[in-house]
Length: 258
Length: 325
Ligand SMILES: Cc1cc2nc3c(=O)[nH]c(=O)nc-3n(C[C@H](O)[C@H](O)[C@H](O)COP(=O)(O)OP(=O)(O)OC[C@H]3O[C@@H](n4cnc5c(N)ncnc54)[C@H](O)[C@@H]3O)c2cc1C
Image 1: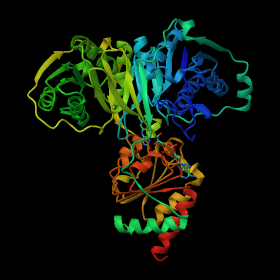
Image 2 (image 1 turned 180 degrees about the horizontal axis):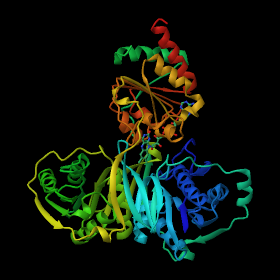
Image 3 (image 1 turned 90 degrees about the vertical axis):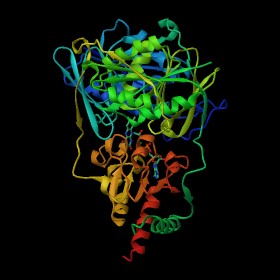
Image 4 (image 1 turned 30 degrees about the vertical axis):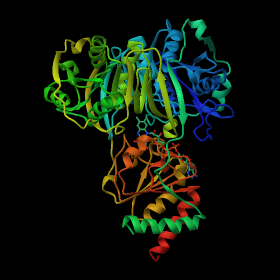
């Protein structure tokens, strides 16, 4: 059985973000990028299945700028067998539906039975790529998956995270698409051997034109701005000892716990 | 031009969930004079449907049947799709809840229309509809517009809108589900509680929580000492429990526990919405974070911008001195 994991390159969360000149998104120049955290868990889940002899192949795919090839190299170094890079210069301006259509077009006829994605991306927080791909393919899907088990007869048992520490157990017929929640496993790190080996693994590069998909931005970013100020914390200043003294008196005044 | 807005409602057995009433409230405010309808799926839900009809929906279409008795992505999507095709709404509102986002994206993919998720506000005029949401886990407010597609599909955050405050005398229409469980590719098995240890943070008067900013399990000591000095319990963000620095029972937030201590101290926590919903009911909130733009400062009462490894030990020391130890 062949599997696919969808991955995305996102700006490192510790970056200092500046809004771009048009005021529509962040200025992406001079940022450092990393693999979206949720996607690391999705990849690990497939690698575990492959280690257990339940999957033949794990393929990583990204729709992203030319620089996004580095996340594919990370996936290959962690253990993916091959990678597909759908190159798009302005991928952060593509709407999620176009990305889903590109994913489907790029993997058509490749016989994948299981597609995994991260629950959301840490930059746009869209929380929809997995479900959209399932909708376009007309496959069953599940989101916020916290455990998965391949059963006999082409079925998958998954546990979906609900709220308040509850889980929903669902069976899905394969082929299926899942989006994975953080904490489902402990993602592995690439080893030096993995990093060396990754160089020899195949990466297929495609474009929207190759795939005959008209990639649009039906979802247009109008503005990006800092959250409104006004209410919020009184920010204390001074040396650590000074702020500590101020905090103690605030806590004493306001809480009654001292 | 009159617009038609459909709310996809959720229920807990017999009663509509609060998010559904919030969506009805939002639907009435999005554009003056809109026609607002609700869709509800389940089994034995006539009274829940009637309640929605009195709390903002001009018509409630409810689908009854065993296939939709429990939430199931395949049955729900297949039941909602024909209703949307018949009704041809301009906008469909869905809760940004685990079941809401689970069905919204497959529905959008099938209908071939974009989806906007996690909205806090939506405004509509004859010319354009603007969706206000968050990006970068709350660091920024993101406004988006959908061009050239109908219906518009959006998921809306819990608690973002006030429920409809009037009463309506809407009609109720039942649709018997013809789906059979055998034909579905997804089946609901059960809902169960996640693992918990002995810790119950819901009763604590003081909680001191550690976030990813603490940097590692070996560095939790300073936060633990502050919790001890305050006679409180140790809480955590999901980043900390996912990484295994603390067991899951310490996790506060939408998928962890909701707490309401008299004092909550957040150390190295950014303040993502899923964390905030679990602690915003705290009496007094102190945030310590080195990023002045961290969203946690938007919910805290008092904040310190700085390195927690300098601030937290100084606070512990000052507390011990104040207590005369
Ligand atoms: C469906 C869903 C459910 C979720 N449920 C939950 C939940 O129940 N609970 C939860 O917490 N999250 C939950 N999350 C995850 C949530 O979105 C965030 O990812 C998480 O809360 C981030 O944790 P954090 O604030 O510790 O880490 P980060 O967001 O990485 O923030 C770390 C912070 O530490 C600061 N920092 C770093 N070093 C220092 C230092 N030396 N001194 C001071 N500050 C420092 C940084 O400035 C940053 O603000 C959920 C997400 C989803 C999608």
